[in-house]
Length: 116
Image (cartoon, rainbow, N blue to C red; front, side):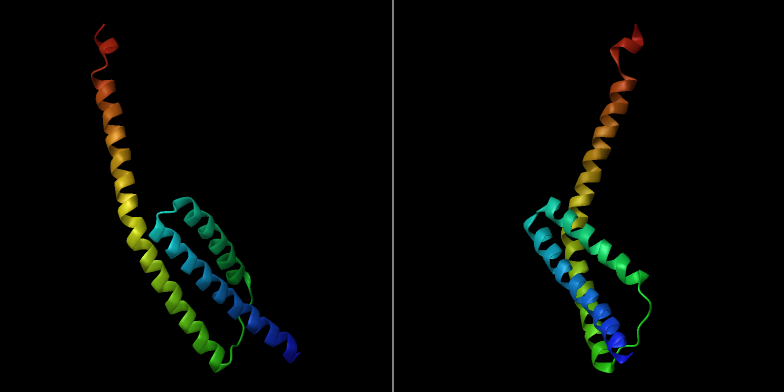
């Protein structure tokens, strides 16, 4: 019975290790402006998060709990770094989309066929 519990504990912690590694790669991709790679890594990360959420809660040893907290801090730091790169890019994208939308609206309003 203890082996199974230990396996679940390790599996839970391994999930956080995986997410920490993937978010580190995501931060590197964001830094390099590799948006498609970032999106692909995000899908992998989201899938692992879904797996962890579906797992039954497990009791971790104090050492494992400490490691889990370290990993969560690393994941949050990676997330903050990713946001530092993606938020300005997203603002520019929304600005471009807004300009495009406005141009279409102006074009429709002043379409020469509308006056015929």
